[in-house]
Image (tube, rainbow, N blue to C red; front, top):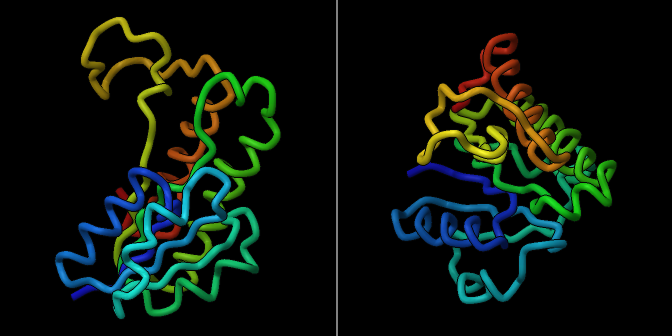
Length: 168
């Protein structure tokens, strides 16, 4: 069985991923700053000896890096989401979704992880010309949130190319 780390592990999707990984017998560390995620989403997992919760901000590499040691898989779900707040707070979105992604990438690289999974966003395609939107569609982020998710995706691809980080 693998040791997995899920950023945004107390969020809606992250908590379900944590549950699934645990149900398959994996050891899981959920990392979340609880700005969007909720402890109640994972409270029922606290008694599981294969589960560990860490409250930390992905934007602070010095606070997260030690939790990547011995990890096989990283699932990077942590992000600030939603369009309107990103228009009001573009700096905060960049800090979380871009700087935070780089901190997670570097922590994963330093730990020598075996697989890095990044959760992208269809918002990168803007208003779709076609539904469902094919991955070959033109990238045209229309809001800071979409742009930061796309830039994060670019960084993941770059780390895979330059540093040979095994990423999808």
